[in-house]
Length: 188
Image (tube, rainbow, N blue to C red):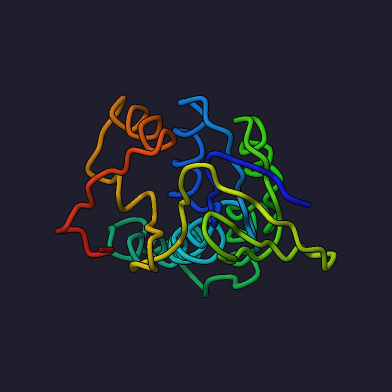
C-alpha cells in the first residue's frame, strides 16, 4: 500500500505537532508517524512526569522553611500519592487526547516505526506487522539531530522562519524550490 503526502512527520512530539499544525494550515497533506505515544518524550517520560514527581517534595521542603507551617509538617511523603500524581499528569500514559488533536488537524496518524526507504519514501512497520509505504511530495520532518544525506529535519531548516514565512516556504518547497540551509544551526 502506497500513500502520497506533501509532508511526512516522523515523531509526534512537540516539534512534530508544531510542524503538523503549520503544514495543515498551509493546506498541505500530512502523515504523522509515531511508534510510541503522541506527545513524545516531554509529555510522558521527561518534563511533565519529572515535574509531577518533584513538586510534592519541593512543596514539603518549602513548607518546612515557613514559620507556622513548619509545625504542621510531620511524617514522610506518601510514595503512592506521588506516583498517582505523576500518572494523572501523564493521563495514565493514554495518548487518546493528543492523538485526537492530530486527527482533528486533518493529518493522518500512522502508528508504527518509520524509516527512510529511498528517495522521498518512508516505510512504516505497523504494530500488526504490516509495512506501509509513504511517498513524500515535498519534505520530511524527522526527529533527526544531524544531516542524513539529502533529508534534513524540517524543524531545523525552518527554525529561523516565523509566521507566514513558514507557509510560503512550505508552498515553495512543494513546488521544487529548495530553501537555503541555515549554516549556523547545530543540525546542519
